[in-house]
Length: 149
Image (cartoon, rainbow, N blue to C red; front, side, top):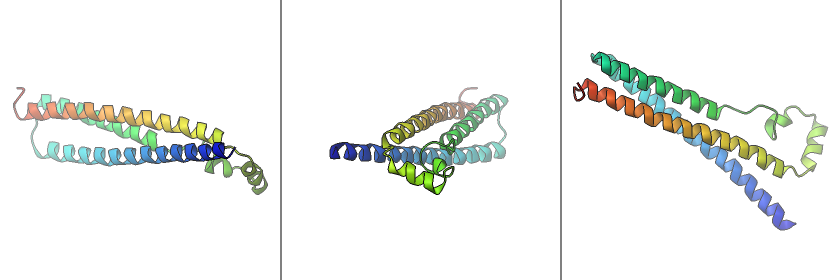
């Protein structure tokens, strides 16, 4: 029985750590995307771009904005009343005592794992979109420099 408790504790800690890592990665990518948008805006506003470069660059900016949306969905708090804090906020002190007297780690691990997988999928989508936006912006830069004219 002691081995099962240790395994549940380890799995619970691992899932919570994975959630934190995913949120950290999403936050870093969100900061990078914001910096990229600021840089593109600065460059595009300071030079006259050929129409083709502006169109392709605009598509790249649109994809970066989609990245921002995907990342914001990935880090959006889950207040659906599941395990942990959101659930506790709906309970009376007596209900909290009753709830905590039960070993609900397995259910919590399952719920947190589903949240982590959903966050990870959104993060993957955002990274794929970032690659696509980067490719579009590189093409726009080549067009602006006359390499693809």
